[in-house]
Image 1 (cartoon, one colour):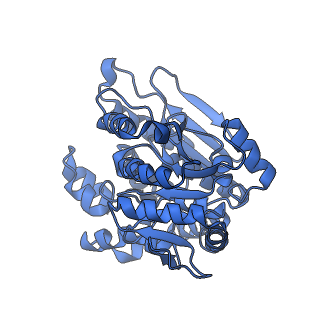
Image 2 (cartoon, rainbow, N blue to C red):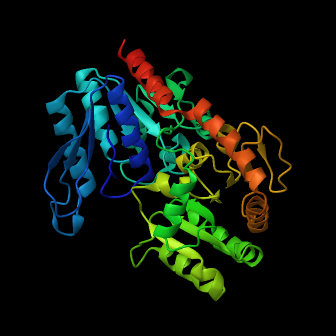
Length: 396
């Protein structure tokens, strides 16, 4: 597995990848993850339960000059030493060059996994201005296999005229034993850890606090939600620290400053957590007004925790994740497993969240259906089995 951004640097795809390789190990595969070492650290090897992480030093020159090409060279050397049977590249980085060269020299299949629409889908790769664009596109289009984590990638794949036989739709997965509904003592414990009242209503958001994830939409909606549900609290779980020149930092500060004082005191920035399942499992409603995703694994994690989910509409994603969604008006029945509102619909987000907070029976009904859908469609063990079957197919 090649992924440039991995723990201790946060990456949603990195979290999903580690959950996958844990399950691959259970099913008998030996996996090595090649990633860039954090600045100022040396090469390091971490032996985990059934898989290995190799962190490769890339910041060798002052100012981080040429660190991406250095990553490519380091990965190629590591591949040549370890001689894996399949190379699986996650996201568009210079690691693609390493994988392609190794695969061609040793006759090993190379798989590219598309992770974000507008970033590493085929049309975006072809239009990427990074040099050498022509070489990168040539290597990308000659991979032996491709994984689309949602149907959203199917149209750009077809429009790029890539071979249909090389593409597999394999969604992201969730460990439904880890992500599950928590009992009342646990829910009370989480509230007390956060110094909240035992009966506090908790709305949870999981993801980086950035514009792409709709943090501005959520915080505008929160003004309405708090006015109607003054005892509710908003938990923000995810990266909330940005470089001084990152506009997402300015956006977050501006949106928080616009909140009325009482609404602002009910917003809790929890940062990156290793116990996301505990926070989500103890909450009442999950909300993600995102503008762009490749899949949105936080959604299926919340569903596995039996939470009703309020999510903005994403073609090829929300209509894939939810089997029987409803709109912000919440005309729900026993089969409804999620609430989908139109893009940029602040009022719709607020309306749906308020309705769910006001109706515990409706929350339980949607939560049960959401859990059933997560188990049936996205259980990590079946997702890992799909990857292993694809690897075996490519090796024949």
